[in-house]
Length: 259
Image 1 (tube, rainbow, N blue to C red):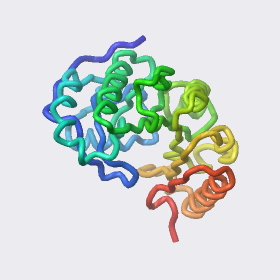
Image 2 (image 1 turned 90 degrees about the vertical axis):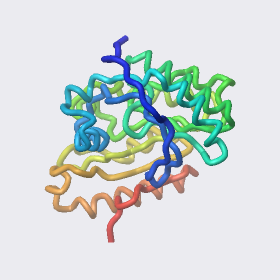
Image 3 (image 1 turned 90 degrees about the horizontal axis):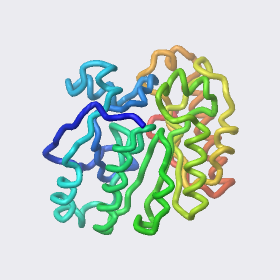
Image 4 (image 1 turned 60 degrees about the horizontal axis):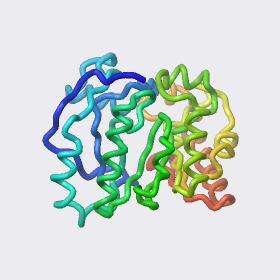
């Protein structure tokens, strides 16, 4: 297992998100060891506002040591306003091989659930089997990011994230236990980045309850692909058709499809 770079404290933890499918969120870690090179929107924003100076800073995460204390303070005040809490939008709650981060995430989910609030989780790590325990709410939703089945692609663009097979296996275990599962196919790469079958990816996750699909943004390689708008329109339609056929809830991210 790997160790975090250190500890920080914050004044607040829960906040409303502007993301279209989110409600409230929490980010109890600063940085992300997965080091994704899509580029990563979270890294770009943290660097833009001076919270992170370099990529090396970003991939050595700091854990927020007073996370649980902040939740104890904020949940009683916000519990009637919150529909769900998402872990996480600017970091990863189950960062690959960081057990201390995973334990803080599990403790946070349990605490939030005790206030009658469900959680949604998204990771490029491995979802712990313990999420299937009865102490967690049955309406929690557990998801992985999956934009390719290629380990070669994963190593190049998600260099320190969990292997794809491990992510899929952990998601299937939770599904088989009766938990709600989902997958985020975002940021999906264009064919000049990797040639692959979207249908193969969809078939690999056809057991899930929900699929979210979105394009790659902030990437010159995508805009250099002249047919990128048509490509994403076709992909989004394929995802919608697949989800309709398999009775899976589908969400196409805003601006993925263009007129």
